[in-house]
Image (cartoon, rainbow, N blue to C red; front, side):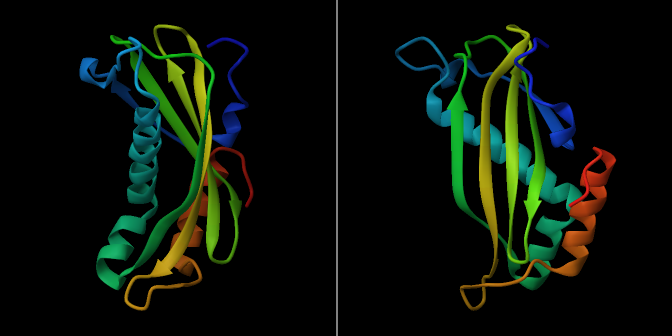
Length: 150
């Protein structure tokens, strides 16, 4: 990848996927809304890896997206294969921040960056709550593999 690539150690987890022709819009590039879907795809896979999805199914305590953003650096076009990377950069009692990066294989560079604020919620009461200790431990362990200490 080119020098536009962000510092790789901020990302502890990644997935790859092919672009879909039907996701292009009238301007002949991937529609801007799809980038948020790419962020969601990697976020949900990250949640699976650290046990959030399983904990949510059992305890009805889990994440809700409080805020998300995307900075578009270069348009994507079909066909292409992308790598979507993520990692937790800030871990607090009831929330954490995830950064994202989308890399285009065809363009050989970073085409978008973003972030998301994930808040923990008790879905039975509708009230925010602390991130369960077992989840916090899993997040810290995964991030430590990327050289980060949270």
